[in-house]
Length: 160
Image (cartoon, rainbow, N blue to C red; front, side):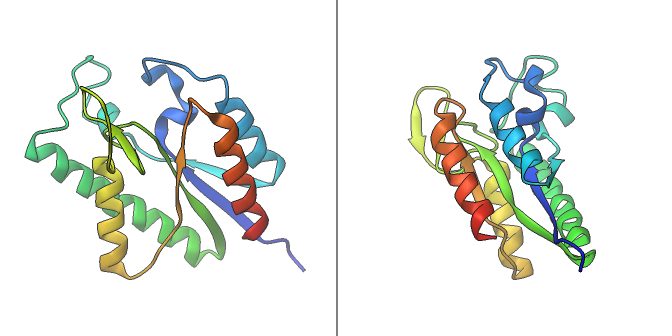
């Protein structure tokens, strides 16, 4: 009998920390947890990188076009997830980045302070999943407290 194939979808900046203004050494532990558990890692596209705003040090997530762009990306992400599901992969979850105005799961930094809320891409992903009537767990990755993230991810891996 073949072992079940598993993948996790992770925010772009977990694997490419060069697009972040602050690097986190804890991401190495997170990546090792997945690879040690034979879970494949799929890097999500980053709306900021793809729109060149990070590369040009200009972030403008407030414009309506940016939300529309995140909506388009969320549709593409879910098509990719569907392809994995159709190929009989177990999709463990999607890892967002806490405090990100784009990929925040529970809290975002609105430019002035940290507030409860979801990032634009996570909001659009959830809306699209609701439209398509399927759900993939979205896990908050707190790079300021990697140990709590590792505990949550480890528990998720044990239960999937």
